[in-house]
Image (tube, rainbow, N blue to C red):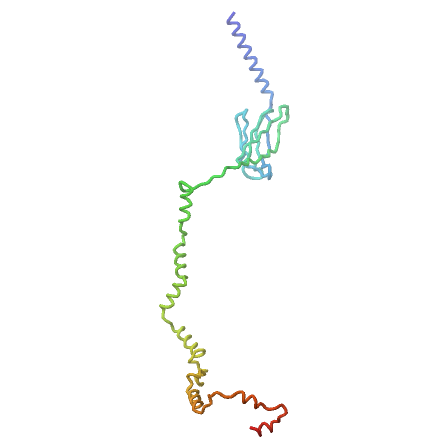
Length: 242
C-alpha cells in the first residue's frame, strides 16, 4: 500500500511537469527591436546594456553606422527588460503578456542621472596653516629676473651709476653746445660788455667823476618844484629863461 502511494505521487508530478512544458512550448518567441536614445537630446546611445533577468541573458546596442543605438533580442510575453547606460538611470520595459505578434518595437528614452557631489578640498600639506605658509613663501619661476629688474630700476642705484660713469663723446658734445648757446661762453655774448655795473670799469670811472664834481650832493627839490613853468608859458619863454 505504501509503495502504491509513492508510485502515484511520482506519476502525478510527471504529469504536472509535462503540462507545464507543453504550456511553455505553446508560447512563441517575440523579436524585440528598438533604439535606445538620450531623453533630453534624443541622441542615440551606442553600447547600452540590455538584460533579461528571467532568461539570464542580454545584449548591447550597436556601436556605429546608421543603426547606432539600435538593438534586436528575442523575448517572451511578460518579460521585463532592463536597460542601463553610464550616466543615465536604469530603465525597465515590460512586454505585454497578451501580445501575440511576432515582432515588438519600442524607443527607449533614457533619463540622465545627475548626482551632486560633496565639495572636496585637497591640500598637499598636513594642515591648512602649513599650506598657507608654504604658499606665501613660494617663489615664482622668474623671481630672480624680477629681483634683478627691481635692483636695476632703483633710482638711487641709477644715480650712483651715473655719477661713476664718465662722459662719452655724445654727452661731451652736448655739454659744449649747451655752453656755447645758453651759457656764459655763448657766441652771442662774446662781442658785448658785461651788463653787471658792479664789474663794469667804465661805470666805476663815471661814479668817481660824479663824486668829484659833487653831483651826488642833496638837491633842493622844493625849489625846483616852485620853478615849474606856468600853463600859459610858451616854449620860447621857457628857453629864454633857461
